[in-house]
Image (cartoon, rainbow, N blue to C red; front, side, top):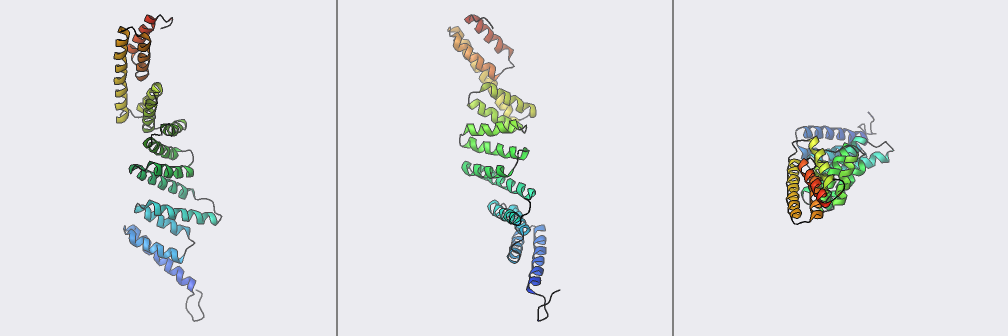
Length: 269
């Protein structure tokens, strides 16, 4: 070991020895769940070794264990900036971790009704992810935030991108069906709902929506019968077409609509 003129180790060696001791202290504290001690040790180690991105990353992990997402993100970003400044290739594992933390932050804001803040967090997450299943999960979360703001067009765009990427889930298809219903796209709603139930036949919300759509079809049919009796055949056919869109497997609805067309004198029924 290098010695100072007085015969002792130099300052750099003393600092490194102290850092190693602090790292061991942080490891022990983390293992025992004593995160306060771990943070104290890591912060002291960073003071002595300020250019080590691994220490910032580790401290971020501890903050994440404490659910302090903002401080965790600040430390992860510091680590990423230091890695980039050193000319090293981006650490994809670190990038994915940061993306997940932004997603978690967005979900927390979503739960608190801060839809605008949630969208900002989800945007940050998506900017770090490629077109994979994980990005589709974030898009699903962002769609929920857009729905909270009644921005159905943006929500539908996110859900359709999930579908186009072949990452659709029963949840995303159920939400897409709901949005199609709100926009009066009944056939599209039925298709999305059918796909949701193909993926998960027991999806409770999808089953309820299917039953509600069938009830609505019956209501359209009842109204159509009244319109037929009153001689309003055109309106009756419109109602029956809506009923068929809601419940396309009903042969009875199709027969009734065919009879209405026949009554109107249409050449093809």
